Image 1: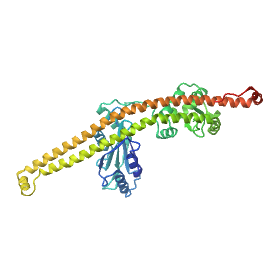
Image 2: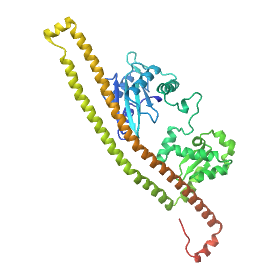
Image 3: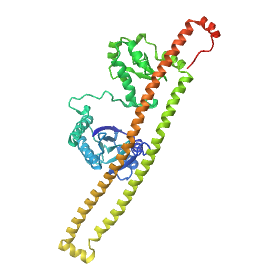
Image 4: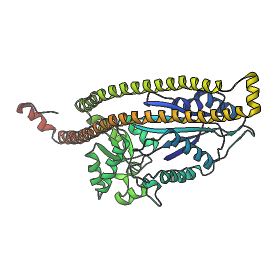
Length: 429
């Protein structure tokens, strides 16, 4: 599993995020340990309250457990990984909560520990936790026999399509996958020998280069949003200067934004609105099918949960009835029968616990198979929509270029425009 962790505060915000069942198909509380409260909001508020007796601001440690895309992890897989991470980090025995999320046919988990040592009222220090988690991730892959991703291979290289949270959020606001944007910049960089060629390559995809106020080379999309070229290309700023020289002669961001505002006409906005509307209509049936599937899966899990609870009550009562009370109970205690009966009850209780856990895992596996089948249809539609956006970007670029050429021609030949009035109407996009 890929393990990513961070020290953090914000008990309420984290609890709300982890229990969010709007953006996740299913949210399961796998474990609550060491807290008085029996719900996540109460538990994390508890940890925050205890931290007030210390100077610690980031009183929690949050860890995400992400199995490979093609593997459906069982509950025990997450528990084992959490136990090993707890030991590696030095958080043994600290209060913790484990939450499982399921979304888009994948299953992952989050673990949250309190960093506050309740006896000594001191925060537990977590030196080099990123290095420790990276090493444990590699061990988990090897233990499960999963193929190591490049980032975990010995001396392996980082995936060039990896992106930061800032890049993700910026791309999300525009409605594009950040990997798609990054590919545009990287492909333009690879096939360009000079600044002009690079600018043309980006312009074909709807991005226009400019001189940034503090970031050197930047690019703007048709809506005037700014992208740092080194960041989105995956290079150093010095490499851009070595290849393209100084950005001094490029137009400023404000100048390019002004030109774009003038060039993006109502017709162009209609193009963008049409494709967005089409994409929304195309995905609506799949979203409806997903909602029905999620509702059905939740109902199945609730029935299983209620059935297991009812059976657990009956089985617990049956085991309790085996222990005699009064004089018979005293005789059983003296003869040793009570001890053997308790041992038998303990063994049966564990077997029942294992049976219930396996039933939950089997149900999840069956449901995940259905969800993954639906997700493949989502992915195929998204792939088609990405191609649609690429074609739109090309059309936008051609439209902007033709508009710019018309503007320059109009400025150079003002007198000819007057004579054109008698030549009939012109075709306009």
